[in-house]
Length: 274
Image 1 (cartoon, helix red, strand yellow):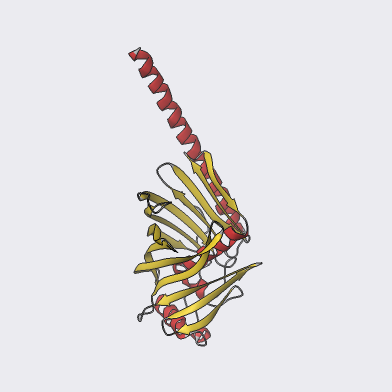
Image 2: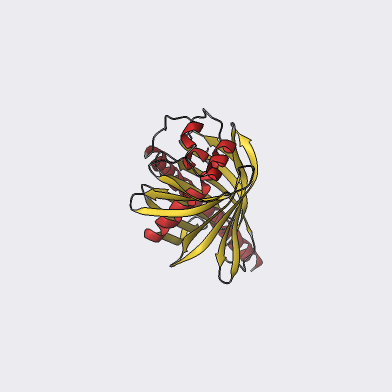
């Protein structure tokens, strides 16, 4: 009997390993397909930062752009980064460790995020004005597959909130315009095809963006949503925050669900990490 149990345990363990290997390969293949689609849909921006062109902007965003970007710096067209951190789905859930990588385009708004947690992976993306979120248990069993206008709104807001990692995208363009609020905040309005979102960026005296607030769909209702930015560092002459925390500001109380720390970031290299 004991021998049979050992054989069963060995077979079960072998099958689990095979499932995990197969799932990881499928996840990587899906990520590669999405990143290729993302980068092939956008182009390089042939411009440099000119301070004279931002002089009509609200003072806080001028302060930020002068702080984060040296004059003459080429525009950022492509971004790829890796992060680590913690994540949770519910307020009563313990924090889970997470590793992720993310890819962005700016000439055409888009991103692909891949997050790997202990039991599942997720791909969050916005390509060709369409957002989606897919999550799979053991990288095989689909537990989430969300699309539609409300997802588009959320993903477009995510791209705007994460533009602190590619600051030239916060210079006015065919997609983006600014409205003044006060000396320490300004409203950004971002449009892409039929979707328009807006959010308020908050700035400190040094010029750093410290917070981003907006209303984002959480399932079927609009809820207050906040991103906090900390630990600014210089990378290739550009100052960006390396620590980000994201919070739902619900009626039941604040729910912090993601805390990411950037461990690697690279500009204008439209290729996937190997």
